[in-house]
Length: 294
Image (cartoon, rainbow, N blue to C red):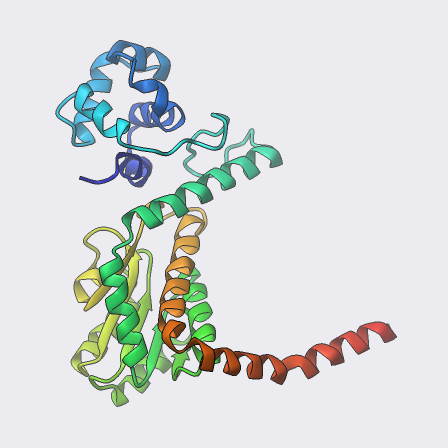
């Protein structure tokens, strides 16, 4: 059974207003909930008792007692002091900068916690091994997902892997004519629905390359195409006002792939990383010298 707090956060954006009120109360007060009746929760949330019962059933519990048992197994405590309420979208008209900081902190904390709770480490191991053994690695991403793809590309390239990443999906797909079973295509797509990514991954499959997807939990088209699927929590609506949790968790997945891939050969790779740093030291010195003359 899914972690109940993760389940609530993943479904939050698709909930009705009444269910969001209940969710807000639970997310802020789940440690108090164990001693409350349906009527207590309803009064605190501004809904009816029947709405509370329907809500817990939607969450997969047989009834309120079963829901409380799931909550009792959760060992997390909100760190926002009960000051932050889940928002959809993240901003509201009355927010000041302090409120925005509190919201972003809470969402970041929850995203990291949920990421590691739902992380499939066996699938991650498969992904790491595929990257380590790959002849060539092609990284794909669009929009915010491109930032995650490029970050991993840069890290792998510095460590000596034959990694490739292009903003032009048309260009990278042209190069797929050279792919074979020795190569890996690593596709970042939070929605798992981007036509360009799906097309490129389909072509990679035709060439027998291994496809690794970093995408949200759920039955997305990309997940069905992937040989290895590394999931991040489904915390944002794909029509979100900005990539917050999705970008953070995709970057974390990239970091884990990178660290896993260099772990066994770290002493040699550390030397290569120092070399690459020395290669750009001249640029840094030049800039500092120019700044002193301004």
